[in-house]
Amino acid sequence: MSFSFFKPSRPKTPQEVVKAIRDSLMALDTKTVVEVKALEKALEEVEKNFSSLRGMLSGDGEAEPNAEQAVQLALEFCKEDVISLVIHKLHILGWEARKDLLHCWSILLKQKVGESYCCVQYFEDHFELLDSLVVCYDNKEIALHCGSMLRECIKFPSLAKYILGSACFELFFKFVELPNFDVASDAFSTFKDLLTKHDSVVSEFLTSHYSEFFDIYERLLTSSNYVTRRQSLKLLSDFLLEPPNSHIMKKFILEVRYMKVIMTLLKDSSKNIQISAFHIFKIFVANPNKPQEVKIILARNHEKLLELLHNLSPGKGSEDDQFEEEKELIIEEIQKMSRLQNLEL
Image (cartoon, rainbow, N blue to C red; front, side, top):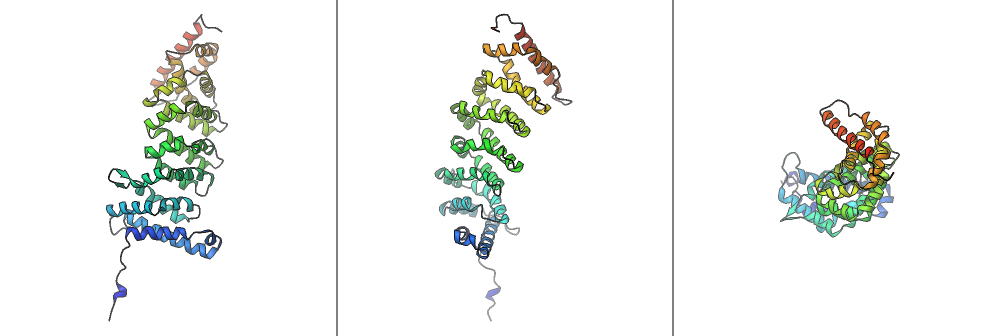
C-alpha cells in the first residue's frame, strides 16, 4: 500500500514562486476585476503567492532564509517584469498582499549580483516606474504603501537623483499639503528623504535648479497650514546647513526676498516656528558679506527685530545657554546695523 500522498510537497523553487506571482497578477485583468467572485478568487491566489515569497525571503519560522534563493528571487522579479506588474496592480491588491509585498520590497532591493543591485538596475532601466509610484500619492487607498516603497528606493542614490530631476518631483509640493493628514505626512517624509539622504546628489540638484526650487519652496514656508510651515522650515535648516550645500546657503542668504520670509516667520504665533526661523535668520545677520539691501532692511526694522529677539526664548533645556549666546550676538549685529551712517535709507 502506498502512502505517498502523506509525503510533504516539494518546496517551490524561486523561479516557480515568481512565476506563480506573475501569473496571479496577470489574472487580475479588466474582465476579472469587474466580476466579484472571479476577483475574490484571483486575489486569494495573489495573497497566497506573496505569502510564499515572504516565507522564502524571511524564513517560515522553521527554516532560515536562504541567501542564494533571495538573490534568485530578485533576479526572477526583474527578468519576469514582476516589479512593473506589482506597481501597476497595487491598487487592486488586498491588504494582506500589500503588507507582505512591503515586507519583501526592501529585501529584494538589497539583493546584489556582484557589485550591482539587480532590482535597482531594473529601475534604472525603467525609471518611469518611479514616476508611477510618486503619482500614487493621489490615490489615498495605496498612498502610504507607495510612500514606503518609494522611501526604500530613495535609499539608492541613482533612484533619488532621478526623482529629484524628474517632472514628478514638483508634485510633492502639492502632496505635502493634501487634506488627508496621514497621506500629507507620508509625502513629507518622502520629500525630506529626497532632500537629505544623499548629500552630493542633493547639492548637484540644488545647484542646477536653485531658482525653480526655491521659488516653489517659498510657497511651503508661507503656507496657511501650520504643519506645512513648521516642517518645511525645519527641513530648510536641515539641508541648507549641510556642508556640501554651503554654496547654496551662501547664495540663499544674499537674497532679501528670502530674508523677509524668514523675518515674517519670526513673528509667527507658534513658538516652535519662531525658534526654527531664528536659526536661519541668524545666518543672514551673521553673514560678514551682507549685501547693502540686507543691511538696509535690518536697519529699518531694527526696533521690531530687537523686541522680537528679546522676547524669544527656547525655554529650559541644555541648549538654552547656547541659544542665548547666539541671540546676543545677533542683537549686537542688528544694533550695529542701526548705527551705520552710510546706508541709503
